Image 1 (cartoon, helix red, strand yellow):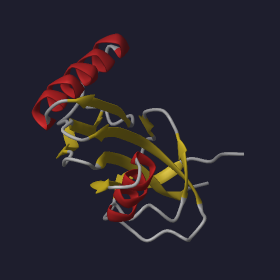
Image 2 (cartoon, rainbow, N blue to C red):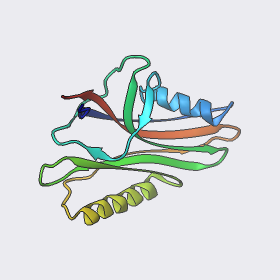
Image 3 (tube, rainbow, N blue to C red):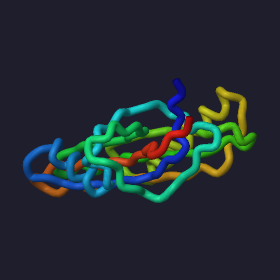
Length: 158
């Protein structure tokens, strides 16, 4: 049985909560429009022929495969979470890298760029333009915070 994604979308969000980091995570998912799905983390391969689409509504409770990055923090923390994705220049699919850190979006983008360069090197293939989606948050005093970024597979071919 083949279960190959044919579409994906990119989304992200960040949020805070005075109650817990789990509640901040839940609200970040809500802002990213993926809070009503059962998210299943997958690794980093974009299938041949898969195309990016706009964020779309998915059925409540749907098992939803995604490459998800998240970073949680507490009062005063600077946190970032993000993904980078690209397609191979030879047209044979693409790849996703995820990352998170205590620090700035710019620092995370640099780290993601290094990860993508290494993925290209070890495969011996050239990548096209690298696209980034990074969220950054300075967590307010007496709050918990969370940043998320995701590549979400949204439709499947035969």
